[in-house]
Amino acid sequence: MRMGWIAALAATAVLCAPGGAGAQTGGFLRAEGTRIVDETGDPVILRGMGLGGWVLQEGYMLQLGALGRQHVIRARIADLIGEEKTEAFYAAWRANHTTKADIDAMGRWGFNSVRLPMHYDRLTLPVDQEPVAGRDTWNEEGFAEIDALLAWVKANGMYLILDLHAAPGGQGSDLAISDRDPSKPSLWDSAENRRKTVALWRRLAERYADEPAIGAYDLINEPNWDFEKPGGGHGCEETTNAPLRSLMMEITAAIREVDRRHMIVIEGNCWGNNYRGVMPLWDDNTVISFHKYWNATDRGSIAEILKLRDENDAPLWLGESGENSNTWFMQTIGLVEGEGIGWAFWPLKKIGFNQPLEITPNPGWARLVAYLTGQGERPSADEAEATLMRMATHDIRFENNFEHRDVVDAMLRQPHSDAAVPYADHRVGMSGVTIRAADYDLGRAGVAWKDVYDSDTDGPGERVPWWNTGRTWRNDGVDIAVDAGAPVVAEFETGEWLRYTVTAEAAGDQRVTVVGAGGGRVSAALNGGVPVIVDLPAGEVWGEAATAALPFMEGANTLVVKAEDCGACRVKEMRVER
Image (cartoon, rainbow, N blue to C red):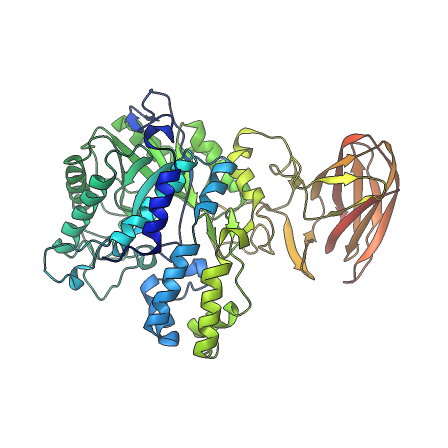
């Protein structure tokens, strides 16, 4: 079978990466009681991201939520540009969406693990396409993609968790998750789909049995299926889950025929959370995964899964979570890490603002999305191809993504620190400095900023507006919009405030000029001193309101801008100058 670009890349990367246990100084991970430990017995807290959208697209990540499933998206694209060009688009997408630069960035930021959501069709044929029924055709190019990612992970001293995100036939009624086609037999409707799933895991285990950089095998992502009776409940009311338990036991047995060392990760029904009937555990190197979205961040919210941990004397892993505010991230990660539980948030990148990397689509994308979702006119084939290839070869690449440092800070630093740190280097010299209002310090709510609404535990659409009503630039509660290409604080309400670290090269008096609009009164306070009140210009046009001179000290200073009496205040920037 043709090896393709990825195989050559993998071969090169393996030669350059540290080998064996050297990349992961702790070697193989294992379950020991309720903890995950390395080979020396030291506890390991997995801190990672899932690579959603790479080899398995979900429509919402591309502003194509109405289409949902990857095969539906693909068919719509093929209708526009033809099968050959569609295949070229997907090849370019896989080559550029996630590269070593993405994994290097994760390593620099402080993540120690990567969760790879695999689509079975990159590794083997669907059962109805096999030339010989009951036999498996293996796609070496797909396995080589994993090899390349593994080499990048090893080069950064991290662990790779293999996650079967789309199983043969699809494992649930939530179709987009597993790219399921409901016109064909599901995983649960087809004995042959289940046989192929078992064979795929045995093949993966054979390939990676001696690789300590593989952290675990996550057997089936988010099963959501009613076994006992129809009802569309996604398995949340199931009481026995016998088919799920049986299949996971069969997969485990196949893995253990060739690999005795790697951890097994299991997921309950109901998107990974319903374990009724799944226990007791059948393998002593098993981790119990649970998923957590859009709910409370107190201990009571995970009480049932903690009980499951203690009853089975097995580690927990928050295998998927995210897509909320920075405050929710910080609180959730602080909660689970306080219980010794690691996590993998979702996803590393997409179009949107609440993950570490944001894809900014090219101008043609909006028109293409409008057509694909039935809201606009059909573009020409040439125009559609140009838009798609620009996305696949440029927009999705790491160097062209917007890095949300505030999201990374909320995940990795803020759960363990209530300090504020600078977002940008605001340095006052002889010529002064202009500080964008949206460039306030990094830190928790009440430490670096305060907003009337900073998180959401109810779910998308349950509350309007979102925490950041502009859904851009940063993922805190501060409401930010883009004006003439630059971020501005668009809704600054009474009682809200923003903190800035300002470094002065010399001590001396400096005037602070607030550039704002919308009327109302704001204050500026330096180093905890008495706030100085200024009146913002009324109307939509930006105007200036200057304070009296404030005494800056040499070195670090703290400037706090607060909405004292604001109905529709907007703040663009502050100028600090003599």
